[in-house]
Length: 189
Ligand SMILES: Nc1nc2c(ncn2[C@@H]2O[C@H](COP(=O)(O)OP(=O)(O)OP(=O)(O)O)[C@@H](O)[C@H]2O)c(=O)[nH]1
Ligand SMILES: [Mg+2]
Image (cartoon, rainbow, N blue to C red; front, top):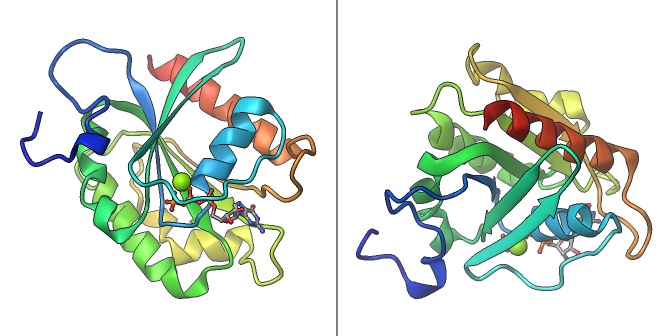
């Protein structure tokens, strides 16, 4: 384990020991990672009320797969730890706030840095907050994140999501995302 990792991030850091592989959930602070994860876990919309200060681990089981999701907070101080978790992951979920126009260049840069050394890691991009008025549409997000430059060998998906009304059932696009992730995990394991 790297020596300089704070205790709040020590869960499941690659140690060389055999462990079940995980699905890593990354993206800028406030993109909606925790909200999406909790909603996927319960099948009902549950918005997060606080930023993730370290790691948020969530297990989600479907008929197809047993999945262990690991969200690392997206605040600036935590981003340098993201890459430490990459070597053991099966699938990367990258969540963006579709209405955060100003930070698309940063979201793009961080995404491309993350995948640059792994040409086959499957990536699912969730274009979240599609309910907001100023949200970019999927085509604009595809361009803003330069997804055509993600490499030909990689399985890559872009899905629009929203976590709009607390308590309601999750949208069909969220259900699709959950099924897709389960399928990718069972194919990759
Ligand atoms: N309108 C709208 N708000 C959302 C949506 N998803 C999340 N939010 C809100 O956005 C804020 C941030 O959501 P989080 O789930 O905490 O974001 P996060 O990516 O986990 O952020 P960090 O843990 O700080 O990295 C919260 O106030 C949520 O209620 C969405 O789809 N639409
Ligand atoms: Mg969070």
